[in-house]
Image (tube, rainbow, N blue to C red):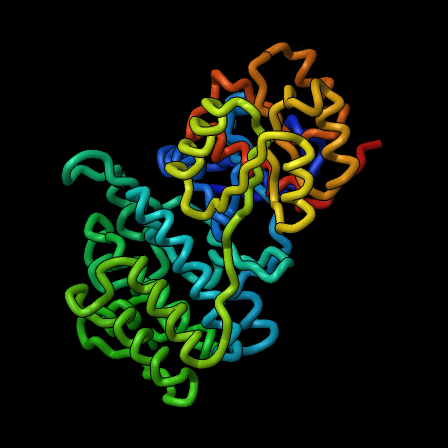
Length: 396
């Protein structure tokens, strides 16, 4: 029996009915691994990592409710349509390298990077999924690792696994993720695994004993990108990239050197707040929270709407009490001019009835200012944006 299942359903998750993927635990032997994923999935917030809406237990069964991605995953895409052109594959690798920069800077190693764990979202973006094997560094040299020997022995996907990870899961680190991303790139470009062998025993021998690998044909990548690929899949970690930030920088420079632009993954947030102290506090929290956020600010509703007219705004954080607008009407006026922009209300009033009134007026989220923390606002922004882009469903 599989340890986990995913279901596509319509769920009422506080902000209305949205198409959602529910991941549930079936095999209780894997409970530790699943619950670790429940913990880690909430620590990440990035445009190229699947967004978790809720994690909880239902009648004793743990579950993760996350955004529904249109797909397919990149393994299925290659199986259906054949190998990808170098530009399409490189842009996918750039996006996942950005996701790994975010994960690694939060001290999380994925440990199962492969085409099947990279999904299209239907809007020109790919996202990294499945943190079931991930580990987060705690303090010093201690890492939250699997304690089940049998699970550790079979963990990961051998054709995309770094040699040191195949030797011991506990030695897998950020450079192991880089290797796996390079092996994934090979598969996208060729439609084949870089590691030959029809059986796991043959693959294991080729990886650790004979060190036998398929070579990427010279015509599959431009020269600058080929050098990057070869460094990613270097057998010894000492010869690989030491950081995904440097890898991502080189990949983007490599694309530009070939004459192609690099798509931005910035999320533009407009903060409309008249209190100078509250504005400074909010901006400081957001700047420290997530490097993917690009910030605009306004002190009146009129000024905020002018920013919207001349800039691309992905989400607005809106104070209800402004010099030129007050109360629920502030939400209504903003939504009338910018109906496609999700609005999250920041209020000094925590009255539940005010929250309900804001929802009725068209806001997408609500948080009292005294509850504002980096984790809460980051989660609220990414969950709100994900739900705003998800098709709604009706229930009869």
